[in-house]
Amino acid sequence: MEEEKVEKWEMYMQMQQLLRKGFSKVKIAEMLGISRSTVYRYINRNPQSMAKWMETSKVRQKKLDPYKELILSWLQDYPDMSAAQVLDWLLEKYEGLEIAESTVRNYVRELRKTYDITKGASPRSYEAVAEIPMGIQMQVDFGQTEQRKPNGKTEKLRFIAFVLAHSRYKYMAWLDRPFTTKDVIRSHENAFRFYGGIPNELVYDQDALILVSENGGDLILTQGFQAYREERQLNLHICRKADPESKGKIENVIKYIKQNFAKHRVYHGIHKWNEEALRWLKRTGNDKEHNTIKKRPVDVFSLERQHLRPISNPIEDSFDINNISSITRSVRKDNTVWFKSNRYSVPLGTFNHIKEIIVKTTDNNYLTVIHPETGEILAKHPISAGKGQLIQNTSHLRDRTVGIDAFIEKVASAFSEQAKATEYLQEIRSRRPRYIRDQLQLVYKQVNTYDSLMLDATLAKCLEANLYSATAFIDVIQHLSRDREATVPNKIEIPKQIRPLSETVLQTNVFKRDVQEYVTVLEGDK
Image (tube, rainbow, N blue to C red):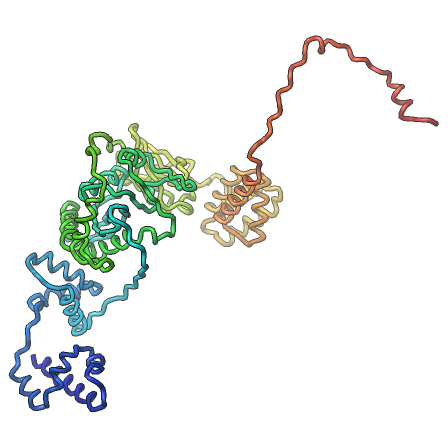
């Protein structure tokens, strides 16, 4: 209390000094970072009345003072915690508490200043986008977080989020394992029931659980999601890569969920976590005024809901989602994928080109690894019943039967200019000695795929551009191959079939001249 009186007196003296220097009361309030009413209340008193007022006045208790130690502990444990999250945690802990967000923001700011708790910078980009009419669009995306458990360990959680573009009304569902296509479909069904209808268009990122390839605008969806799309008659829009403007609203929702709901929250199991998520949506995510539309999403949604397409019969009655068994997996640096506590090999060098692949299980207990863009089957393994095992195809291993020098000679022999090829491969060896066998293996794969003309042209380009790596060699040869395919005529004339000769023609005797007659003609007149 004494410290607060000293602060008030120092502020009073600063006001008097600034007033004598000719500053206006509005400017003084701006310079001291206080309200004009405070300036008027202080400056109209003389030193004697100010001192008497300070002695007789009681320090007013702030509304959040009873929660000061709790809020302070949160800020000290999590210095980057936002005032919005402090408010949400208070409302979660004390359901009957009524407090304005501005009050919490000011209180948190004072605590940070008093106890020197700095908050890290968190730059954010904003972009104006035209508002979308009611019921037109829903945006969908995935996210993941790592949450602390009561025992101090961490758990990786994944979630799918939905948001109606007009009202900003949100929904989310969490899993403690990677999503499968079946999980995605079930989450859509739960979201449609949550919203009470289906919007005209759904916007997605290029996720492997949904999209196999853009195919020049003709979307090739995964088998399971294509069947679901047809069943529900969904209109889909897949965003192009590096096109955040098309799905900015869902990206903001993903960030909001991570920063306000998940950040610093202790994980007590997936069922409790999903229950907490739904309560957060009701309490904060859909109830708090949105910064852009300046309205509460729950209020706007009450109008937008009327513009959604009604849900027909439950999907379980007409569509067997239990047959969908595709899942995305990250390719590990050792060129394996993790599935049910075991490692399964993929072709050597896969990690250098593909970071995520599609994994499918079949009824005959096999695991199939599929390229996410081309649909090519990269590997097929019997599923192991054990744990911690490495299931490896011998064709995915390095060729250890030959030494490096012999391997270089073997690869170079496929080129017309073998000396230049050897020199090129030796240079790769000097630059990447630890990975030379992997590099040679990748180049050797191209040797088995392309003809010598294409190999020679690629070698010349790489030498000219000083490109000494297997990945660069692959990029060049694929580029040249595409150019060559573009120059090949689309239509090739097929010669007409020659009619068979008749038997009479075959039996005709041909007249033969004596060779001396030709000699006479060639010699000419002498």
